[in-house]
Image (cartoon, rainbow over all chains, first blue to last red):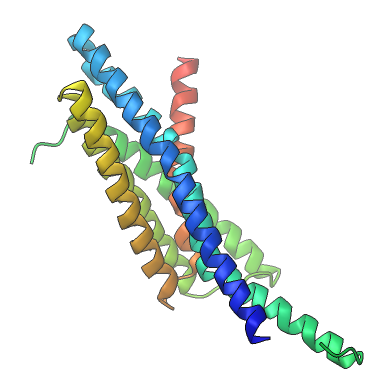
Length: 103
Length: 131
């Protein structure tokens, strides 16, 4: 039982780390590219700075979506999933022991 | 500290959307509690307040750094945005973890509002396309 709980906790932590690590790479690259292109656009047309900045801010918010999703999943994996999985495990072990199956 | 007018305008727009969506989320939680699916207590609105503040703060920080980066050279702007993104994500992860750990906040109501600015941005893009 202790080994199973250890595996669950380890897998949840590993999953959260991988999720956050991979999920945060995309927005960084995307936002960087968007801003560099906006700099180019403002350099060509300085009078359109307000419009370009406004569109870029909203574009960056959308580019950040995957990062925020991965953050939410990582938080849930760390704080919610372990207790849920351990609860399921305990329930299963209890049901099996009641029906006479030894683990 | 000089804040760009566009940043304030967009933050106000996103904040109003976060407020509307938060009210909608509270209504959904109330309906779910009426059917005994969720237990309604003070942790739900408190968590929602904390999550909404985090979401608006994150959007404001992003908009502030992006608007500042625009006035720099292309390469510097790229690096500045990448650095700000990394810092913001670390701060957001830590603050969201604090919100999830404290018993006075509901975990789900802390993390769900983090997605609200994205919905506001999607709707803003749709509105601009229609115009």
